[in-house]
Image (cartoon, rainbow, N blue to C red; front, side, top):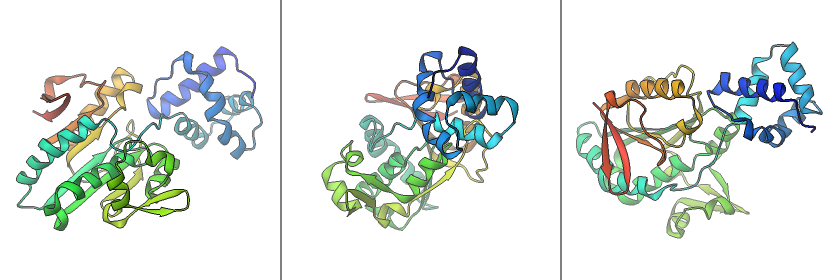
Length: 272
């Protein structure tokens, strides 16, 4: 693919922003060349400049959404940032269990879940450390803007390279089955997780509140306005006594609705 003029790159960045609120800097323009290769092939387009010309002269919302999905950052791993999972194991989940004994029900939202490792990590944490929850109604809801990564999350199938990133051997043996060069999640954790497509910058159709929300490493890529809007939505979706985790480099932009809790070497938030 040949490089584009600055105005064409700016046009593509605007397409991505309108559909995902993802702010791409001009220094990342080169990523269009690599991440859109498969999409061009799918649509029978040979060069990136042909794609831009098509977008300029014929409105195609499906193609624009496909571009935004392809440019989404999908970096993830099992038990990413162990400090978060330590706080969940030692503080957050025990408190949630105590407060939900009457209903025996837990609802968790893994926002921007990518290929599902965060959701499955939490499922393993629950099964490994809290056997008393075996009879509870537990649902870990994973959402992502990319339909491709959602399909992978639903399959629960990971290459051995992915398995080597943060997953202890004892959990690999207990919760996964070998399948050639890949590993597949067992029903013991797979049944706890459900995955579906959702755009965090568009209206969300949840009909429930969540006891725990993991919104990690998402807001780094959003505009200030999008961050404020997303946190307002999160505030409406979280239970009055729920817990919110952000990425280690992220903070709540407006603390008027949240209480900051410092736990060891990590931080989480509770609604006021």
